[in-house]
Image 1: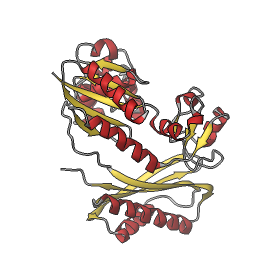
Image 2: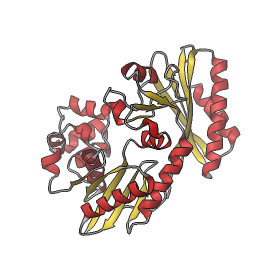
Image 3: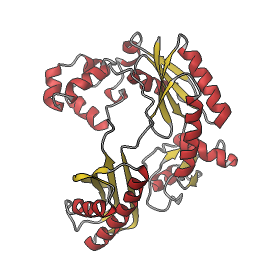
Image 4: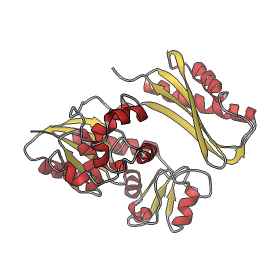
Length: 341
């Protein structure tokens, strides 16, 4: 039988850092920015010990420090995480499975097997033996169920979610438990009186289409029924975009200074685009106004390009789309690539 396995490394970034600093094992570790919790930056990841204090990814480092003052704070080191991820993916590819990478710390595996749980165990053993990193494995009869199953498997366990136990496991859970439904969408569903997976699965498709559009509305209903594809492709994972951002230690309102910062970020993004060897087709800017209001704007380029001058000038044009004069605490520039064929 064809099975889909979702492998998700446990507290990946924190775990890599603990491997590099064994003395930190068992301590609350928080990674983000340059590692200084007094500066404006956000948490990239937190160890399980730090999460017990309510620290989570995306939280301001200052808030994390207030919640967990005894934590060890470390600077983010993407090259180290790239290398660790490659070692894990090499272990996965040594098995008779199809490996579809999803980023640093997770991948779908497609496998023809009569013992998916046994395969999951062998994979976990091999990953630990070769990398000293632990992983959870979700097992499903499609991608959606495998991905959701991983949440029940963490940390370092495995869980099977299929058509047979979907209703028993998921029906009474909130819609937010579905992969593909975030907080904003869950709130909108709540406004329609659709609070659980069961209620969404039984919802009127027409009403959903009216609220979310003819494509997305019915799709949310199918998610609630556990519907998803089963195809796992061995195409290497490709980033959908490249981005750079900077958090200012002191808010900036001057238009000229913001333009200078956008140019600097755009040049770094252009270098990333060049390294990807794929042209960008859209450029965007993220602005976080004080105290904490984030807005994004973007534009499609006349034609896909890796030309730094075009990316830079386009980022400046996008910056013009924002209301100016308000204090800004964070700026970001991103370039997205055309979807692969």
